[in-house]
Image (cartoon, rainbow, N blue to C red):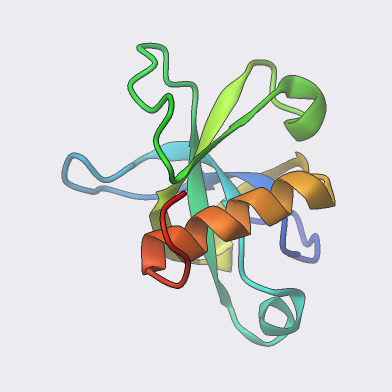
Length: 123
């Protein structure tokens, strides 16, 4: 459960993504809330994107990935935010608040989502 904290765009949470088939991210996973604040206030669900450690560097250089560092996320290690893993979940699946992205990094993530959805051209 989300600790009673108000959910806002740019927040990082540990979330229970449930059971999914590969290659969709499942189980307990860090995510970034990308739903705008106005919608977060009225819905009991949010859109999130998955965060991964990408130990094998599989995601490096992909046009829909943003690399982030511990000082930008509150996570203990360098990670990658994968905008192609855009998921809608109930707020009750947000388990533990971790931190909030700074506006510059959040803007990069939102731009990557626009690329994934075809609203922006690939760089």
